[in-house]
Amino acid sequence: MKKKLIAGNWKMNAGGADGMALCAEVCAGHKPQNQAQLLLCPPFTLLRELAQKLANTGIWLGAQDCHSAEGGAHTGDIAATMLCEAGCSHVILGHSERRGDHGESDALVSGKVSAALQAELIPILCIGEALQQRQSGAAEQVVGAQLAASLPEQIDPARLVIAYEPIWAIGTGMTASLDDIAAMHGFLRQELIRHLGAGGAQVPVLYGGSVKPENAAAILAIADVGGALIGGASLKSADFLAIARAAG
Ligand code: PGA
Image (cartoon, rainbow, N blue to C red; front, side, top):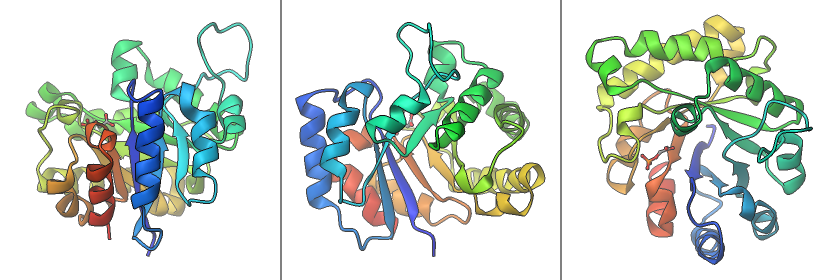
């Protein structure tokens, strides 16, 4: 059975000594025989140091964004190749906080996914609906359209991860119901197969949005939930490790 991917998205937190301590705690508590593959996504400033700490632990390292260009005059941005050089295997792209804070469009996100793939990083493409869209019954339509528009034309399904994160569930303590998660993940599986062919059946689809130790086992037991993208709970090593244990 494929291991569940449990990814910690530290966001703009734990960028110094606190992040190094958090990483050390996760490494110390991680059991490689667990049915979870761990991935830590710290702020850019910690990538190189964490890459050294994570070497030979079996825990993967990811970043939280990259630019769509290979390099050049883009003040304040970072290229996918630089993340690769820093030791990353993955990069989170199109997170709703970036779409919101920086006005990132599906087209821009699609360019970033292409850049990540060219640099041999695995993109974790985030999609999800707003509360009003869910309440009006448009969730599948919105998320399906986001997926279609954020996926570049040429893509190897074996090098892609999707994260379904309902925006209203992120950092709010509210999670989608198990039935709604199951329905959306089933829908996304069909859409992935429609866009990518048979390989779409193998693309891990993570759930994100207020995942915590108390709800992780039930969410991770849903068919087609390939893991979880964890924000707040990834900043506490005990919670993050408890979620990882819930995956097995
Ligand atoms: P949360 O964040 O777990 O704090 O809801 C999830 C995310 O934004 O990836």
